[in-house]
Image (cartoon, rainbow, N blue to C red; front, side, top):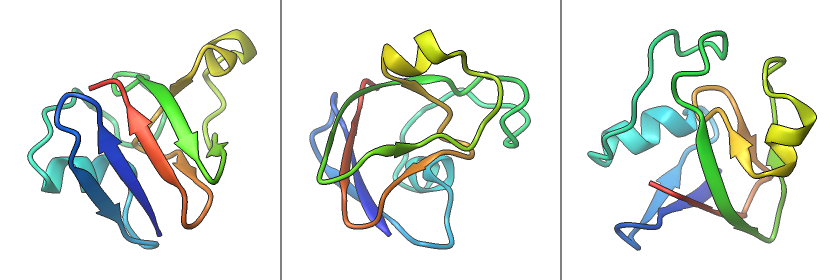
Length: 90
């Protein structure tokens, strides 16, 4: 489990160990585009503003190294390490 904060709301959202980041954002009412929910379409690509106490765990094969280095992630399948706080540019 970890926590995500949406920059436009500044309200932390808990993400369960068995839940995707995308599902947690949707549960909290965050409007985020998505389609395949499997990391193939890249529709949900989102910029990471920062990660406290952890790192992004990229579980996709589509984002390029420069995209990852610039802070992009796919919340439909990617996560952060446990007990971290992720901040997204949404």
